[in-house]
Image: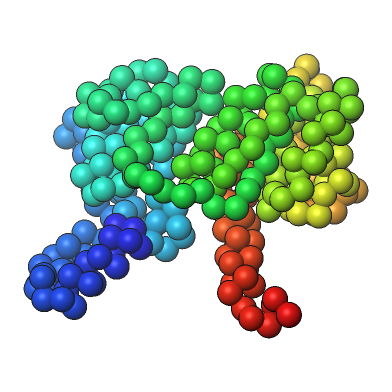
Length: 269
């Protein structure tokens, strides 16, 4: 249940369309439901998370069987939620498609999605920049997840520091962004460069792209943690979803402040 569904339920109770007992029954599903597959409990799905945090629970598909993901997705859909699966395989998608013909699969970022919301406006602006083509899967994971969370997203791919003129040529795109996600492997320098050009928070995402001494993403992780450019927050290696969640919260807060300022007569004087 999200905030809109809760508001609709309370209005129906106030209007006498639904009794208190029925409303109590609907709310009794919170905060989670137990999901089983092949006779075993596989998950306790948190249907209350969107009401608390603004975002529904996502499915981390890695380590879950297709049948387990299918069961979790069915439960989410039965409760009117959005199915967002990360680190999903084609087999996960094929299983979910058996219960949701409108399921979509994004191969490069390994995203599984069933989103039946209509006419949902996008909020604010987030820029997702990636250093190289090899980083694009993680960057696209961040971009798709942020869009599902309700943010307007601009993608800037292959703008790494090896050809810094490519980044400088598009720096105007950062102008109205409320947050920037910078995705980079190898030495991981891109977030530091961007943070020196903008006044908004930069979320740095190290990727596992690089040669041996790159240590599977540890080298860019340390570069980003040790950056001398202020205003950078760092998420875990290859964690596009985590970067999207953080950027979205920043974006929503900034958009809400902007809307509040526009409604304040004193702010216009």
